Amino acid sequence: MKRTTNHESYPPYTADSPQEEQLANEIDRSSFHTLKDENDKIMAETSDKKYTKSRHYFFLNPYKDAAFTRCPKCQGKTKLRKFQLVIHVEPQQIVILNKKCRYCTGCDLIIVKQSDLETLMIVCLEDKNPTIIGNEYFTMGVLERKDWREASKGKIDTNETLNRMYVFKDALDFELMSLGWHPTERLQ
Image (cartoon, rainbow, N blue to C red; front, side, top):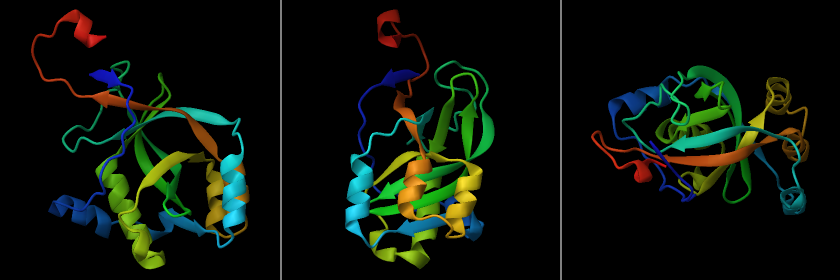
């Protein structure tokens, strides 16, 4: 695998296979929560803050045929863990998903398959705000489980949720390489 540093956004996803449709139908609807802030001023204030709390590295896997059961960074085995992902969807919509992700404990890397994430977001937004389905989004960070529960019950507002969020240390991109011989300078 070759690591690249460009952070390009990927086009919106639509379900292409029966497996992805089945995933959308099997979703536990209590595992996600959306927060809509009617006051644009609060959202503008929170976006100007410098977040000092950071956890985990993040990789949004755009490859449909690569599950990354091994870490692309250290080649160690990845484990399945649930993370409460905080996602910003344009215009000013916060979505919190309680999602199973691949996780490398050695590298502290969360790997999320883009097709699964977008399917979950479509199911989440169908009922709450269908006009923003397909808009650009950005995975900002993670919440602790207790903070996610409070946010899903409406005990804390959007501003407090963003204050409790842990932003990602860095968003990494990896490029799949074909099998075969490769010169050593290309692998670095």
